[in-house]
Amino acid sequence: MPQIKVLPSDLRNKIAAGEVIERPASVVKELIENSIDADSRDIRVDVLYSGKRLIRISDDGTGMDREDALLCCERHATSKLSHEDDLFHITTMGFRGEALPSIASVSKITLVTGLRGVPSGISVEIHGGAVKEIKDFPAVGTTVEVRDLFFNTPARKKFLKAHSTELFHIIDTVTKEALSHWEIGFRLTSDKKEVVLLPPASGFRERIMQVYGEEFLEGLIGVSAEADGIAMQAYVSGGENFRNMKSHQLIFINRRPIKDRALSHAVYAAYEGVLPRDRHPVYFLFLDIDPDKIDINVHPTKQEVRFEDREHIYRLVRSSIAEAVKSDRAEYARQFSEMPESASVHERSGAYPAAYPEHLRSGASGVSESPGLPYRPSLPFLYLGDTFIALSGKGGLILIDHHAASERVLYEKFLQGIHLNAHRLLFPKQVHLSPREYRVILENLQILGNFGIEIDDFGPETIIVRTLPDVLKDADMQGVLSDVALCILEGIPPDKSFREAIAARIACHSSVRGRDILSPEEVSSLLADLEQTEHPDQCPHGRPTRIFLSLEDLKKMFKRK
Ligand code: ADP
Ligand code: MG
Image 1 (spheres, helix red, strand yellow):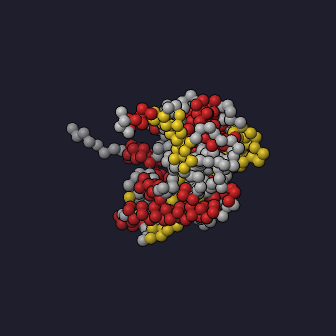
Image 2 (spheres, rainbow, N blue to C red; image 1 turned 90 degrees about the vertical axis):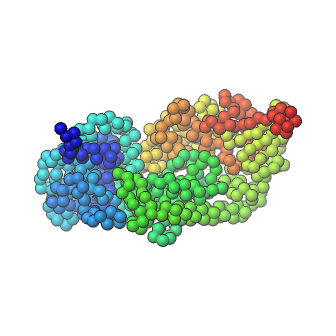
Image 3 (tube, rainbow, N blue to C red; image 1 turned 180 degrees about the vertical axis):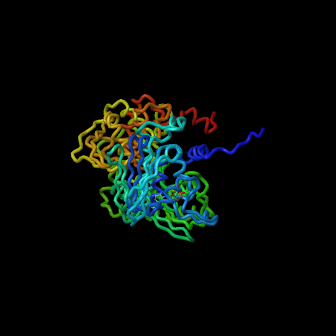
């Protein structure tokens, strides 16, 4: 008896849906992309209960006629491809004809659509892939309502995450699509409350500003480049605007958000010699590549792209960003050389613009002296480069990484909540966050409060910082809060408690950066504080804070023993 049978179409659709529709945010992505392809100027997304109950996408696009509306939920039904050759010249977001049948097979959908300029329309209701009702319904544009996602695939439903997590994925999806389609207005509501509102923008830059705020954009430098069928427009970290986590790193190819390790590497390579260890640049790369030179048909949700000449793109990204970074730093140096002389020595965090090139700074190496200061520490110490402090003590040589050491000190202070000296700010700071960060921060106000950071909602997407511990008074609060949000979203490492993980993130921002030279008093108090900590030998991320070479060690090294 034959063992092989061809699967019935509803089962085939469910299997295919498994690849494309993983969670509510996948439905949002596919339906938004359909609306984009339909030449919409205004796309509205409404979700109830993080999309588990309802996802509704409405657009003002071309709409469909009756025949297309009945066909669009059939597998491999698409208006975007007709010949094999088209597959290698894709100019639309969709092309596989899979999204609607996949969604329809695992939910209850109602599609209402009508052609532009025609007074009639149609409504089609499909439950679990089976057509339930078709009726005339006057409509302009298209609205797709998806209810009870995964109602007939309980195994998939079980994998859905908590309400807030699924909502964050949806916000992220809408934000990404909106970033690369700035000419379209986007609106997202969740449980009837507005979460994202983005009117049409004039370009990539304005859209980034709408999403992240003006201050954020000021920390970025614009780069554009063009060569052999590739055009790049990018906004990347300027000055010392680096993050502790890989946040806000987005690549769009032909307006599609994609992941590509090589291109990400190209950006890091552009910062060679500039980017401190364990710090990350922010980048938004927007690449337009001749569709014949890439293959998008390599991943079911089109998150990856195959390039005809990856190396060429790599080189373009790397060299153009490297050049922009170089002139940005030269500009910093110029600004600094025009500063009055008196402002230059030993005033931490005000005196050296953080990005000021090392070789132009006085006192960046050698014995740190502070002739004008009344107090001289009893311990002589040497700065080795701009991160390490060497001093003699305990019968040997102690080498200290001042950044790691101060991270340890602050981390423990944050954890204990003491000696933080939180003050109410005379001028509260307004901070604009991305919609996703904004929600995460508002959901975790209490833990931030424990660390002396008091925040109020100032909406939309804006919070106001009212109280700060002294150590954070000069910190880039958008960077701090964005790192904290990402840390919560990515999940807490198993060896840390929630409080510990957040404290480590914040401590990292407030502690001295690799490039700030400490004054002698600061060194003395750092050493004293480090002694008081519970684990003085390691920073919260597990790197050593100090290394001790005893006389015995030195003798062995010099082969005297
Ligand atoms: P694909 O986008 O890969 O073509 P889909 O299953 O997502 O496949 O959609 C099938 C077809 O339905 C599309 O090719 C398009 O013709 C039509 N369609 C889907 N959504 C819309 C919309 N919002 N407006 C107009 N037409 C749409
Ligand atoms: Mg589609």
